[in-house]
Length: 224
Image 1 (cartoon, rainbow, N blue to C red):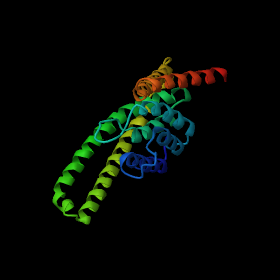
Image 2: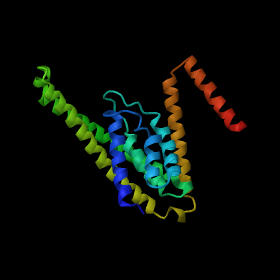
Image 3: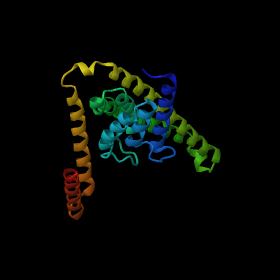
Image 4: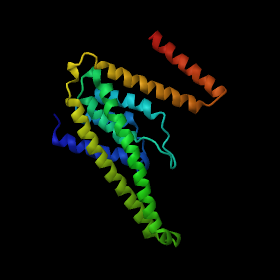
């Protein structure tokens, strides 16, 4: 099903994607479109990974990871979704990505809250040293925070990989209406992305320009 090398590479990529979300290097590697596509390539099905990334990106467009806000973590979740899509039939790739990626995103968001609380405890313990300008204390905070995030990402990637492989082994092809799962996941993603776009556009001219952009996109699709 999956080689030991591929397992190692998936876990490594999951760690990199998880770190990229808020730690380092923040180079957009955590975006679902990137994370899932690379995971699919590792598993030998880049097209399936791309489909997973595209649909999970729709859900992630409604997420703004800033400050102390609570949000789902689609980075490692997209890696798991990409693996699930890579081993699924073409017509079920989107559905498998949603079945695996969306619960993993919620789990990832929960682990982020735990990570923040642990980092806060670490800061509190070194508060006096930091206030005194102790460079070593600041380095310890940076290093330990990064290591915790890497450990969180690897654990999430491991859980996601097992989850993806278990889901992909189910006899989906024997169910006549299983393709409806893909349509449901896609519909939810489009709805989420559209709702996020409306909230971001606000009111007035920006919302009108959003409507113009949507209309032009529909026209281009229909003409082609």
